[in-house]
Image (cartoon, rainbow, N blue to C red; front, side):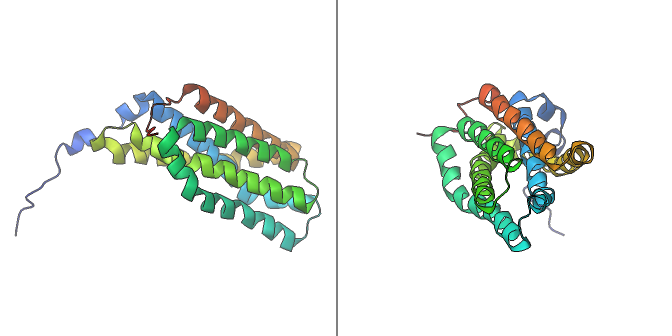
Length: 207
């Protein structure tokens, strides 16, 4: 049996969780990521119901639902490199604020065209914030702790799916679908302000 000539060193120190919780910048990324995925849960679970309530047909709802991820996915090819040039804070903060504007408009949507525009705007906001958040979480960590930082960020970000379903679902039960859209817009907007004010701009700005 051949012994591995390159054993993992200092594994215990790399698995320490405490420093991750103490990193204020990583905490900002984590909570913004959580909100980002919470409103994503709203978009997938509750937005179709809101559009049904607005009397859109099922094919129309399918087009609106598809518009959001198509715009988000394609624009990431450009927004990721943008954050490499101007830093992470501006795309993250602006992206969350753009998402908030889109979510608030859904509570007023009664026709297909405004719903399509809102879905496209939501995709633009998500494309701005999503890749920059992942990059910011990694940028700020020492090189040997980047996987730990990414795992910490992903845990909180993905918990947003659960939080969004529980919180916005409860709002629907209490006050209805438009109120849930307004609540999603509010917390997303506050998260954008949080990132704009508190996230360091010197993270990975190259031009």
